[in-house]
Length: 299
Ligand code: SAM
Image 1 (cartoon, rainbow, N blue to C red):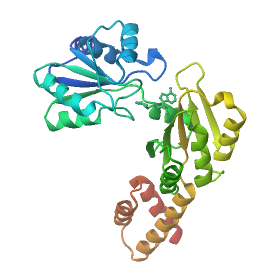
Image 2: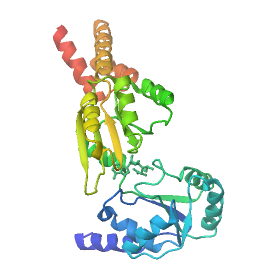
Image 3: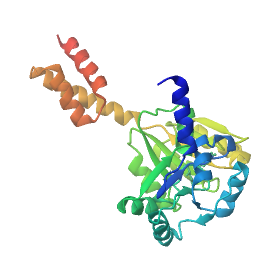
Image 4: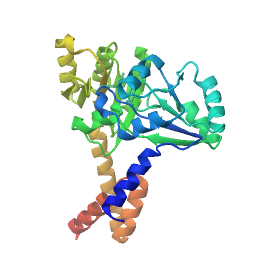
């Protein structure tokens, strides 16, 4: 196939953006309208209806995109009942799209019950990927991204919030939280209390918008920054906290001890690697290199 033919095929794919009896899960911008994807516009323009969290909000987006489609509301309070209606429409051969107010539906937004029901009933569900605050924040924060845990919003009640943070205290993955400006100070204080002041963190604010800002430093420094810049406690936030590197180091020491014991048994490097990978869940290449290094050191 020549490059021109590939392009033509891709364009044809876009022109026939939707199939019948299918629900498209369409991500929309988290601030900057230009972040909408070509495919999202195509799909929104081609489906029979669009289910939206807030129909007035989505109407404004559709107007800006030049799309005119019937809108149906689907929010936390009517999702169960509405899902049944949407299932019937899809089973009757209609195609639909699900959008939320911003970002990717289902990511701290409605849609889970609907998608679960459709999958149970064998209805096709197709993702149309695009913006989501969690990935947008992580990719520019400068914290490790090889492993992370998305935690959504912390609980509103103080005790519960502290309890949740306690369960995450020794997690070695980067932790990602969503937060509103009303609870920012309380959440940062709780992080200070549980994680301590030294841990590195990044607060990403108003991403893709005019006042986009990434505030990085230790938990104590980020807390102090927002205490002395009350005007910045505004807009939408993603809080990211570095994993517990001390716990990780302890794990590594334990692995070294295990590798040492297996080397003493004169097991082959490959077998030791497989055992340690199985027990630790670490990457095979990293474990293999560590086994080799310890073997060479012991010879
Ligand atoms: N579905 C969305 C997604 O894919 O990211 C998340 C919806 S959740 C109800 C809204 C929260 O996402 C906000 O309170 C904030 O924590 C985060 N968020 C959304 N847009 C943001 C932005 N532009 N900058 C920073 N955080 C944002």
